[in-house]
Amino acid sequence: MPAAIKTLQNGISNCPQAEELYYWLIIRLKQSQNYLEARNFAQQVTEKFPEKDVFKMLSYLMLPETYHTPQEIDTYRAWFQDGLEKLIQEVTINSLDEQKNFIGISHHTNFFLAYQAKNDLVLQQQYGQLVHQIMTANYPQWSQVRPISSISNNRRIKIGDLSYFLCSWSGTVLLMSLNMT
Figure (tube, rainbow, N blue to C red):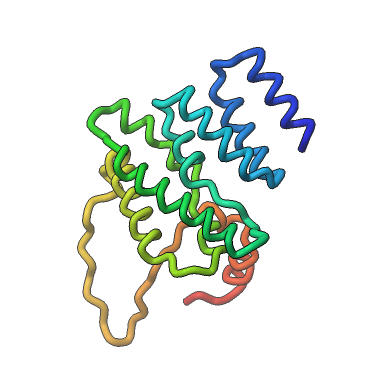
């Protein structure tokens, strides 16, 4: 991982306008468990590319996978909550450019919020409303209200679940092996 980080840093030195290099450096720093460095760098990149909301997402909402102390959980949770509030205030989708720009939501998940073992209901609702707003602006055809047909007493309600993590999650393997009729 350190070689990848060095290579990305070198690439940024030689090509400072290549936004993808900044994105991947933030991701590699996070993956190498340099969370504070990744977050601080994401904040710097947000200042360099203020119109790129993917960097805001990373700067405001990045969470580690592991914590060393309860205080560390509280610190990251407060950063996440403050960042989410900032994003909600900053998101304006009034034009086609703003719609496409904020598709940075596709590069983020708040999956690791649950790793803090706290009550996430309000934060998840706020995040869900933000995602809904962004996705509705970008894909209005998929966010239309659909009528729900009545269900007889003997029929099961079918619910779908969509997640980036389902493709390689051990729970998916288990569920795929069960008879789900």
